Amino acid sequence: FFSTRIVAVTQVVADVLVNLEGVDRSKVVVIHHGFHLENFYKRNISSERIDALKVKYNPSSRQPVIGVISRFVEWKGIQYIIPAFQELLQTYPNALLLLANAQGNYSGALNSMLAELPAESYQLISFENDIFALYRLMDVFVHVPVTRDAEAFGQIYIEALAASVCMICTESGVSAEVVSDNFNALVVPHMNSSAILQQLLKLLGNTELQQQLKRNAPASVSDLFSVETMISRLEDLYG
Image (cartoon, rainbow, N blue to C red; front, side, top):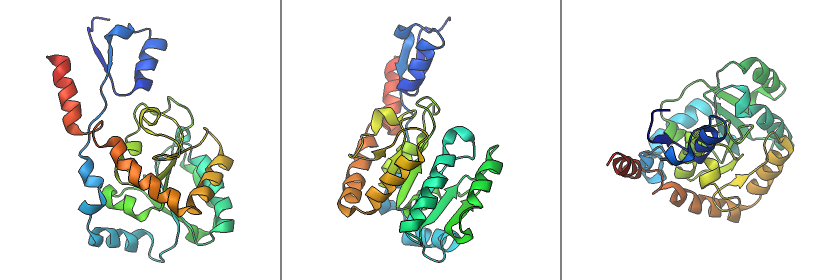
């Protein structure tokens, strides 16, 4: 109430502040988080780092690799990815589902679903320190929170785009401001396994689309989400 300005990290947060919390919109300014995005660029990640993770997580060189980096909580929507992957195995029987940060209060339900898959078709990763190289193992990255405001920000969207990984996602948090369907990612409706499967098949069967997404993704975030941009906007605010 006494604040003269309130920083929201995304437009979604700004909308929640105004529409749900009753904050005066004139107080709210959106300043995105900033990142050292160069850490995710392919040219800055050695083949030795990538190979070390392949040995740990995909020693049989299964392909394609469908990557997920989400805590095992219900609102992250992993329960809609697993059935889509199960159907994907009918077309790509050698596919691998790579699930990182695989722990949380929804583990019981998700592990029960995973038990229906062939044991060799998925890999759980509790924690991986070299997240930058981990993206290089993925052919497709999937992130599908269940509502628009489930994510306040959603750093993972920015990381995947910076890493030039083909992404399938829902609109949530910052994705509404940076993701453009069929330009830098493929967007699916919330809570829709069938749509996830359709987009996986579309993407994996279209090399030209894959290359287009990879080309456009990093440029979508390079300026808006840099540390320098964040600091500059904060300096303007406090000045």
